[in-house]
Image 1 (tube, one colour):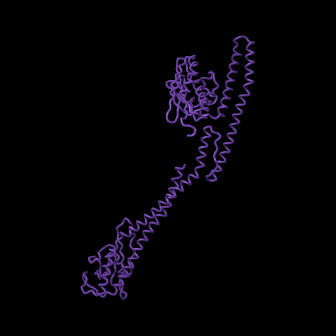
Image 2: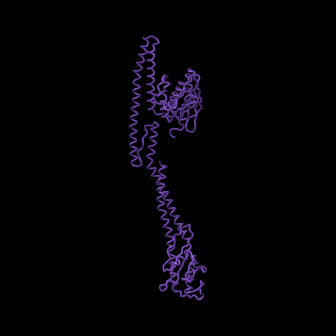
Image 3: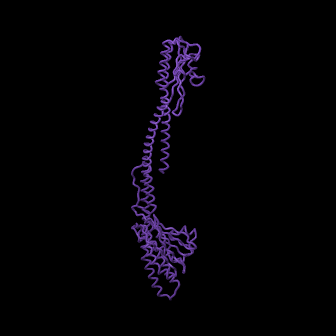
Length: 470
């Protein structure tokens, strides 16, 4: 959830910063240009004031008259000094385009372009309009023109043609400062978003982890109600109340199963004893009394398995670093006489490998799996038990040569009291694999089932190699 919420917050904050930064950058560029334009307006106004007192009026060529009066020379010196210091081309031109004074000396009014447009506008007795905005990536020039008015008439026009390199550099410098500020603000915003999402989602992560622990059998796990929005704190309290109620219900159910199984064993044992005594009074080989004895013994096994299941669900695993290979080899050796008596070959490949498991519960689970494999494997077939490991888990694979199960039956295997319709007459209660699953789950292990080719069942038991502290 954080990977989805955090980019959304960052995009929104970036959009806000851009919405603020772009107008600010535009205003910085406009302010820089306006400052330059105002300076050029002041300069052209000063030159226009000087040109008002120049009486020389050439009427023909663009070449200056050698008899220019002292005021014209003063104006020329000012323009030349202005050009030498600032590098700005400037000139005062009569209405017929002839120069009154200009610097550099070879700069005249062009026939077209921005200079000509500004000159024509100033001839209408008003200052030229502000030039278009020049951006840092453009190499345009700034042209400003002001009329020289004498006796109410426009007699000449002062024109300045300014380079924009320095202005564009200052604009770019201002943009860099804005960019640095935006970057710093973005970093702060990302830090704030990380803290905000962590504060909001921390209760969700704790709730998710606690739910996983409860789902894997740790019913004592609870959510620590601390931090986060009030709604999530209320959700955590409600979750804890629900977990308490569920645990109470399951505890009552387990207690009922255990108590019922325990209380029924004594009357059932007494009943079986009386049946044995009754059998002594009947003729030997009576089928009815034999059937009653068989069903009674089966009922006793079911009660024992129910009690074992209730205890397995209630008991926590005592995990220890265990040699899985040695433990499996021990169980294979224990079941070999029974398999040999049935004509089944029980073969074990159990190299030494360690994993974290409860040795007692793992042994019980392996007994149930190997018992089933030997029970449903016909004579002259084999049961293979192999141990392997990788970086995360150790596996114990038990394969048999029995009839196997269909896809529909594979889905149901391990359910309580479930038995295949073909095996209803085989001894068993249908609880062995259920008990194995509960025992393994208590220690973080799993059990799974699959087809074994060409026929038979493949049971895979997995136990973790990482310890509880990991």
